[in-house]
Image 1: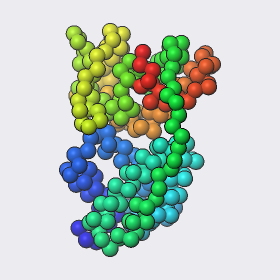
Image 2 (image 1 turned 180 degrees about the vertical axis):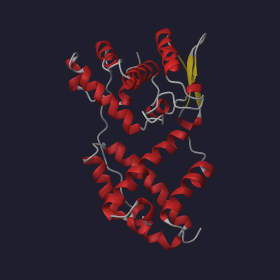
Image 3 (image 1 turned 90 degrees about the vertical axis):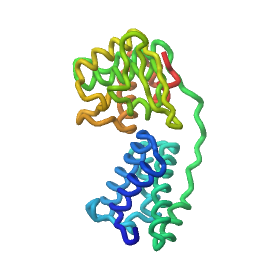
Image 4 (image 1 turned 120 degrees about the horizontal axis):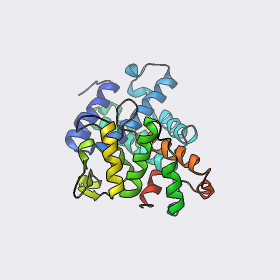
Length: 265
């Protein structure tokens, strides 16, 4: 593998390391993909090179530090999200160090970058009126509004993690008697979560509208792709701001996808 370019190393990292050696879940792969999508875009803008011309030298410890600052200041990521991004970057550079030893010192400097300390917040949850206001916030006269309503409804009823929610496929929904959703959670363990009658009915209507193959995402972007974690966080924030107009108590809460998990209705 000696002498491989950065694009080739990144591709091998995903195909060989994550998929073959680690057998990483699609949720983990999606998280790593989002991290490197942001990092490559940042490094390309900084170096003035197109992404395909980036080299390992263009992603040194200084660039990684500036990228971490960027996602906190420009994108509003918290310390926990910042540390998650850094963990993905470290994993890649460990792979580079093992396979391209001439870059060992370069990689060591990046691997030495510390996590950021943070104070763990107390768990936030929504009460009944707040849940009702949030579910009513999406404009269901639009396709995205109907999708967002279903997403919030499923999140609040099932308590699925953000990665499990965005990773749901059409085939993961089982309707009829014993209606439930299947998901692959932490440790690659599959679990089934029962659906209430109203949630099952809403999903049935959504599946009639959103026609895709069984392996297609249940709650896609407008391009038909699975929603990213960033997109999920954005839409939760957006609808929370709308809901706060009719339910002022929401204005004083920091509502995230994780909040929905703790507010299971």
